[in-house]
Image (cartoon, rainbow, N blue to C red):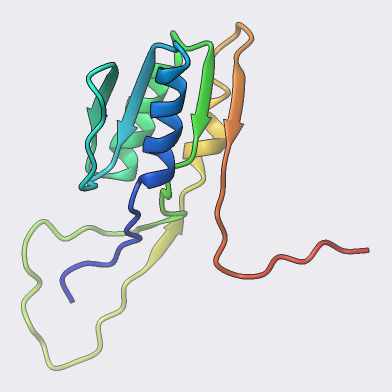
Length: 131
């Protein structure tokens, strides 16, 4: 196994950024590794990991009046990241994960002045509301 991931097309984030820019907003788009382009009126910050996205979003949020968070950032991160190929051994190998809730829940806590803040979350399973 070479990679465990949660690939996202990024289409929703780019569409929201374009619409906001079209309506006159100064837009900063923090984007993961996607094959999409943004118009010249959008400031784009490219990141590779959820950790990088968290820090870039936090930095952009400090001067923002509105934040729309819609990235498909993974909720879990590996407990240990191998810096090089793990040698093949003829035995089982376990990969552990830790919950990583920093992204949406903590970005909004970094600023004292009022900011409109919205988060979008797509689910791939049915979510039932208790009656």
